[in-house]
Length: 279
Image (tube, rainbow, N blue to C red; front, side, top):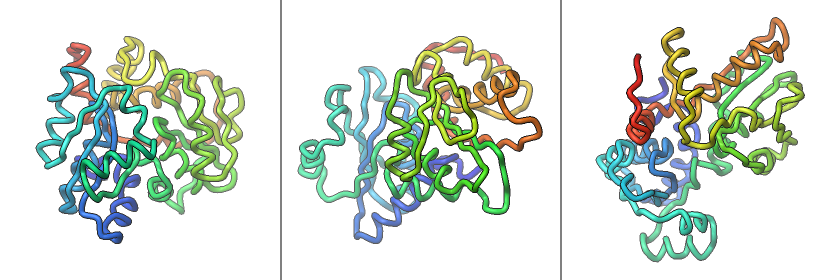
């Protein structure tokens, strides 16, 4: 509903990064992501709209080079640079950043998922100032959106992040770095009266197939006519549904679930796992 290609939370994470890039005289944006990255798709579309050159360093397994996400990004003018997982882990190092400057020239670098102060600043604008919610839920991949929501939450509001990453223990620390606000890294969501990120609903891990979450997505969409993506929002809505059924949320409370878009990734996910879903 924000934009057909720069969807959900992606515009909020990109808007101040793009403004800073243009103000600094940059005409090229370089960023990072996986082969089915919503961030790469959105960055390609946003740069196309702004008339900026775009480059993506893509963590890519053999055979994923021409998937729907990357094909669309390439069609929007994005230059794709493929690297293996081992090289990709070095993306934040000074040596790797210097190598990128030598290879691609002068550019403005946006971290994977828009995970920087400018990204979090944009995500502060997701909440509308005149609306009150007791609980605010969002999916977490980098914690940028979560950090923006925490920074803009009012007194008495609790922001709960649902991690989509199996075994991670860094997202709460990352959110604290971006906000300076204490965040609980809560495996089981034992307490729901403080801002926290939970690993309790990561299922098989990031972008992994799990029949239970696929079944939930199909049932939810058939019942409510709200489309979800396989990687983020299916886990998010499953988590909120589970907490409601178990009576973990205060009776009479008002809940906001932030749908972060990402629907473009469904086609690639379903092709990867050979899914033929009944809709």
